[in-house]
Length: 137
Image (tube, rainbow, N blue to C red; front, side, top):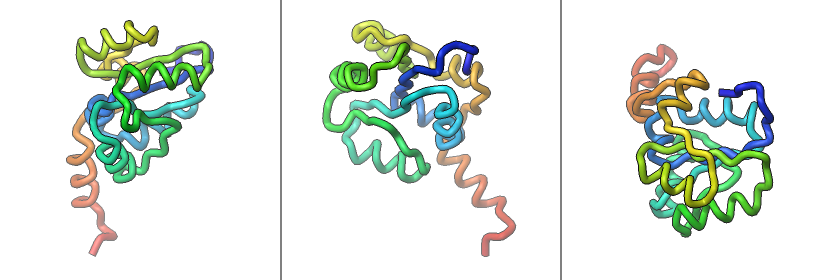
């Protein structure tokens, strides 16, 4: 996804966008190579985001916590003063939100194509990998 521009970027994933990626842990690892900060924003309760990120071994620089998405994105932009702030989402409401808080919007499909990320259900990916392990009893 790095288009050769500045890596001075804050990247925020809507939780549902992250859930549509086959390997969300690898996505975060990859994104850390060309961003300054990466995290998750969601309307879901904090424990839902925390459970998902722990299960997938994702270390985030920020998350929405108990606040709504708009307040979270506004606070993240204020806290992380980077040249670009990009919000990866899944639907028109995500695009509208990004515009409302002066973030760039990128649909998860477009982000995945540009960065070489695989779309898919991460839960199915985990199960498929566990089923195919030959070192598993």
